[in-house]
Amino acid sequence: MSNKSKRFILIQRVLIWTLYFFSGFILYFKKGILPSAIITFSRIIYPLSVFWLQIRIKKRTNFLPIDSKMTTSQLWFNLLPVIASLLTVIFSLTNAFLYILEKLINS
Image (cartoon, rainbow, N blue to C red; front, top):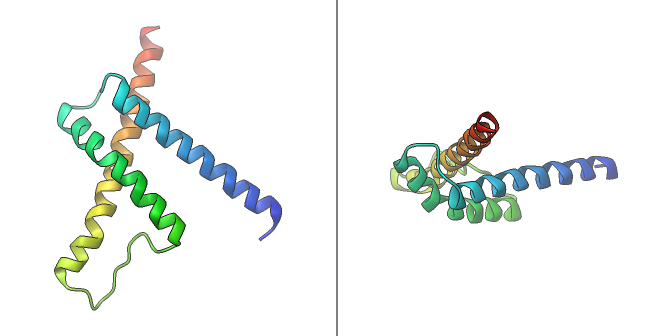
C-alpha cells in the first residue's frame, strides 16, 4: 500500500470518528430530537459501541464473525453487539443531523 493511500485511509478514519464523537456529544449534552426511547437506547449503547468498534478495528477481525458450525446462542451473542452498534450509529447520526437542521432553520 502506498504512502498516499495510507494517508487517505487515516484521514477517512479521523473524519468518521470525529463525526461519530460529535454526534455523541449532541446525544448526551444537547436536546434530543428523536423519541425519548430511542435517545435512551442510544445513550446506553453509545459507549459500548465505541469500545466494540475499537476492539474490532484493533484486532482486525471480521465485524460479523459468523460460522456455519455456530449454535443459535453463539450466533446471537455475535450478532447482538453488531445490531446494537449499527442502530446506535444510525440513531446518533440522525439525531445530530436533525439537531443541526433545527438550529439552521431556527437561526
